[in-house]
Length: 439
Image 1 (cartoon, rainbow, N blue to C red):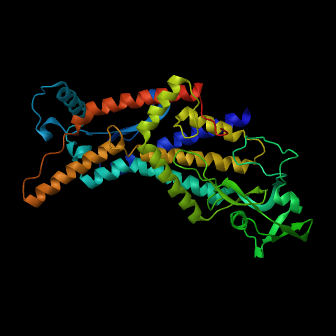
Image 2: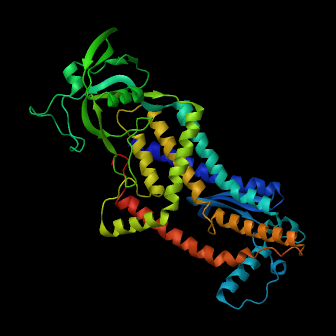
C-alpha cells in the first residue's frame, strides 16, 4: 500500500508539473511579445492559493485537470473586425465573447492585446504549451534510458523449458510424460549458464543469439556456456516450432488487431535473465520518436476508441490493453508500477517515468488537434489570418481586418462539453472496469 501511494503521489506531482510547464510555455513568449497576462492558474475550479506578482496573478486551483493563462485581448474588438449588430444566436455568443475580451484591455493598452500580434508570434505563443510537453517527454525518456537504464534480456539463462509447449497453450500449462523434451533441456543447459558462443559465433546480446537460434532450426550446433567459472561445450539441435516474432529489442510483435505475430522458427527452450542497462542518447531519442508516432495513431483514431469504450462500458465487457484511459487510469498504472513485486526501485522508477513521458506525448499531440478551445484551434485561426494577409499583400490590396476568432466560441463550447463528457466516461470506466498493466 505504501508503494502504491508513493507511485500515485509521484504521478500527481509530475502531472501538475507538466500542466504548470505547459502554461509556462504559453506565458513566457506572450509576456516576451508584450501581451499582458492577468492570470496563470494550474487546475480548475475554486482557487486554493494565489499571489499577485507584477500584473499577473499566479494560483493553484482545486481540480488538477488542466490549467490556463489569461491573455488579454484574445478576441479582437468589435471595431477591429467591423462587427455589426448580432442577428443570430451564434453571432450574439461571439459578440459577448468580444465584449468580455475588450473589457480586460486597459485604456491605452490595445497594442498589448493578443489579437494584435503578428501570425508568427501568435504561433509561438500557442505552440509553446504543447512543445513544452514534448520537451518534458524527451527529458523523461533521457532520464529513463540514459540515466537509470531499462530492463533488457541478458545473456545468462534464467530458466530452461523441460518440454515443448505449443505457442497457443494456456498460461501455466505443465509438461506431461508424452511431451517431447525441449532441445536445451535434452542438451544439459542449466539455469545460471552464461551463453559464450553459439555455432561458433561469440554471443554479445540476447537478440543476437535469439536470431541465431531461430535460424538454426533442424541443425546440430555447438553451444558454449560459462558455468561455475569454466566453459562447457554442449551440443544442441533446435527444433522447428511456431513461436512469437520479436523485434530488435526482443519485444513481441503484434499486428493491427493487437494479436501476437508468429512464425515457424528454430526453438531451443531457454529464457534469459533481465538486467538493467543504460542506453545511448540516440536510443532514447529513437524510443521517444517511436512513442510519438504510436501516440499520434491513438489520437487520430480517438473517435473510434471512444466509441469502443462506450460500447464496452454499456455491455459490461472487459477492456483490453489498447483501450484509452484517463487520469484515474494512469494513476492506477502508477500505483501498479510502484508496487510491482520482485523489481528494484530503479526498474520501477524507469517504468513510471516512461508512463509519464507517454502521458506528456499524449498532451502534446492532443493539444494540437485543430479544434477550439485546444491550442491547435488557435493555431489554425492564426494561420488562416496570416494566409489572408499574405494574399492581400500579393494582390496589392489593403491589409484585411483581424479574423473574428470569437465566431469560434460557440464551437469551443460544444467541444468543451463533448470533452467533458468523454472525461467523465473515462473516470467512470477507469473506476468500475479499469485497464491493468498486468492484463
